[in-house]
Length: 376
Ligand SMILES: Nc1ncnc2c1ncn2[C@@H]1O[C@H](COP(=O)(O)OP(=O)(O)O)[C@@H](O)[C@H]1O
Ligand code: SF4
Ligand SMILES: [Mg+2]
Image (cartoon, rainbow, N blue to C red; front, side, top):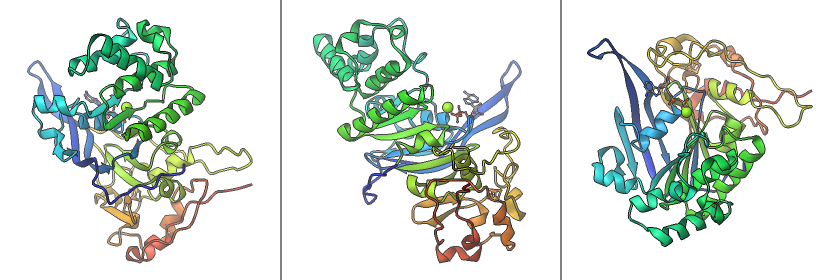
């Protein structure tokens, strides 16, 4: 995608620091806590005004939990979420109610996320009334305008959700999220349930609305090809942690983390004459109840070497604003044997380029292959 030029000297709208969300596992009639599901385990990232950050990873890696915890639809286990200068996790109920006007969510399932017994006017207008913004005719007018803005007929206000297609329902979900003029929207798999052509329409609508209302999005999806079309930067999540975070173009041109490379290799190329090496990740996703020691990806990583099963990898900035959590790029642990890099998934981004790593990363990082297309 053609990424917008972001003014990264601006203050972030949202700064997530060391976010953790564990779910207790209880047993017996007194609900004794016997373990924890470490759904989100120490993730940090930030979102600038008018920016879209994509959050991607396999099902169960903690994306929804992260998104919901940020909005305090789930209470955090630890960390901070500084939104517009204030830590959302420290707000009392009244302050949180006010903050929620600025932070909204669009859910994955356009069938179950709309109350079937409510009219479209009641669904979209509910929060407008709840926050005392408008009622009666004034509220109706706001709802009609919102429907028009998301590409639907104003006359639909008297209808019920079952009368609409999946794409239309998702537009209704978007109108509901927009009703309070938020600054930030978590789009949780917002287009994943839609047909590809409808997905593109809804993504285009979200982009238009972003410019018009100066919105920031956290765009959650399990599919990198979907995230690519809307994100300025992309965070890749594996088993509760962020393993790579970079500008969208940089991530697609030269993904560094073996997991990101595997995900990229799974995206079909639009040109059928171009063959690519598809990397099938072996083994199941480990349990977040008892995640693997050292690097959490080591049980499935084709490049796993010496320190991987023992030492937790640090987050390394491999080039400006491109962060990777992997020993391969850490001068302290990088492999002496350069053939380790030959085991990296040779995934196939469209415009591969062999970028020279910064000198600070040393010879090992220089040996890391940029990912190349395998053409017939
Ligand atoms: N309420 C809950 N109680 C216990 N475990 C949960 C709960 N919600 C999610 N989980 C677990 O947390 C992990 C992350 O889930 P989720 O955030 O839904 O992942 P994703 O959105 O990436 O598919 C999964 O292992 C899931 O089973
Ligand atoms: S730290 Fe080791 S196991 Fe983890 S992704 Fe990097 S090479 Fe693979
Ligand atoms: Mg989810």
